[in-house]
Length: 118
Image (cartoon, rainbow, N blue to C red; front, side):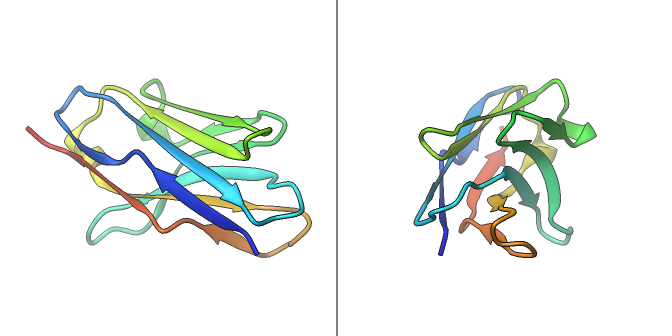
């Protein structure tokens, strides 16, 4: 069983920054892909950014140039640095991960709220 625990959400003014963290525990295999999704009311959950254990990265077009994803494999942790935040970034952000050791299974965190408002 894998547990993903997020932290770092909150309320920030437009143009501000936040850093999200997600720590994975309870696994005895590598989490090959870790990333972040977000969901706002009335919308589908969407991919924000993902990173493989080898460092390959994918971003949603809406966050390119503003968000940076990184991971520390030794700490089993993934980070999302969010800069130049906009009101439309307001959502619940979910950490996720998957592994070739458990194909077809996605692991999810409980979600952390990010609110961008003046």
